[in-house]
Image (cartoon, rainbow, N blue to C red; front, side, top):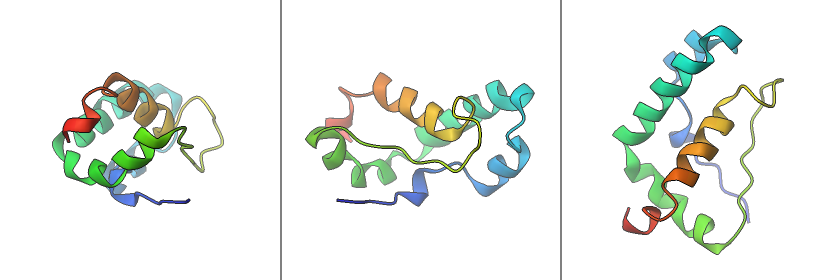
Length: 86
């Protein structure tokens, strides 16, 4: 089954500022984590998939290490036990 949770992606403003520049990744990551913390209601849509098994996070960036999917993955893993309470 496929699901596109576009509302949990970084804001357009943040993505444009980041511009996939390595020197901005740390600041981008922090800002994106704050966005995720700010509106967790959108994560309710993702919760059943996370509980059911492996989830693939898709991204369009050329750099596999410096992209929003890596930040989202780490954020989700840190909160894996909290997801059931969303």
